[in-house]
Image (tube, rainbow over all chains, first blue to last red; front, top):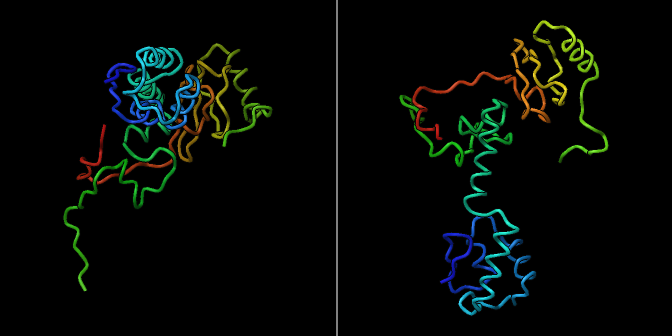
Length: 125
Length: 92
């Protein structure tokens, strides 16, 4: 078990894959990190030496904004929009799509599950 | 796609004069503007604008973190209506 960047415990997968379990590190960042530390692509986390894990931890702590910090930053950005009362902020407040998508239909991810309108009769043939 | 940097921010020219005039006059009056498309510049901070939304001039007090946005973003043009049973749809 390896702990990198706080609570994350990537498994016995390849380093390239398991780094992506950290919030804020995706395919590209994982690749860059592996290249920087010269970790071969087929190396698994449980095959890493203690020193390598230490280097990983250091690199991520130093150069990347991950987990709590990143989540907080994102939340702050949204809060900033909401406090400013600009259009994007209002959309965030109402839980509607922010980037100009249609809301006549769809937009279910933002709006949540569809709620039936009371009293609306179903059309029967 | 964002705007090219070399063009600089887009502002309707007459706003600069209006803002300048408002700065010089000591009275804190609302500057009425129709130019919703103009970028908010650092020199507008602290002034109050009345941004037209097609019906009314909505007062917008420009603050530090509004710089870089457009005036129109702070003056919604549509009236939002919802069903009374839509409570569940609201999240967060």
